Image (cartoon, rainbow, N blue to C red; front, side, top):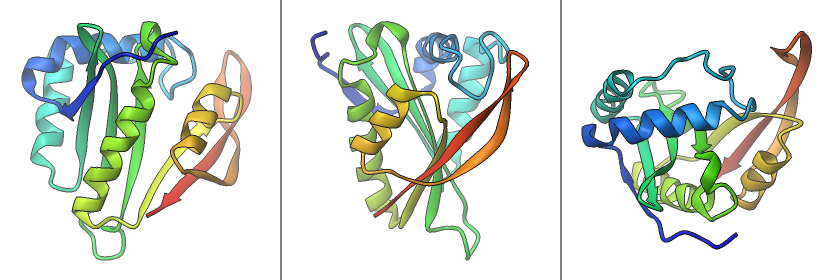
Length: 169
């Protein structure tokens, strides 16, 4: 599949419709924390999330525009407590139609710039151990497996493990 020309930037309220669609598509994969359809993300809910994260100086919500839509998103949630302000927890999702086209890589490149500007030392995330595409993306972005959360999620009646992954900057 051909790479998309993509622009990554901080989300603005006008991205709410596209963000809601991208979140719904990413969650439909079954590989996210929320089960398909569980969150029920709406444009109004996306607008609230955008505004909340824009007001939080320790966090960001990045959107990747490509192919005429919000093709993916990345949320980095940080803290301002003395002992944890050096790190952020990352969640990323790519629209189903845009996977494998450089969207995830573009989002992680922009995350690196944001993290460096904020003086962060550590980025961390969790991912299902059976999410081969996600694990490969995170490793290409410099993340390493630090451990396993055994029986972390209950998916369709069975327990699923997650990797703890992190990248030191």
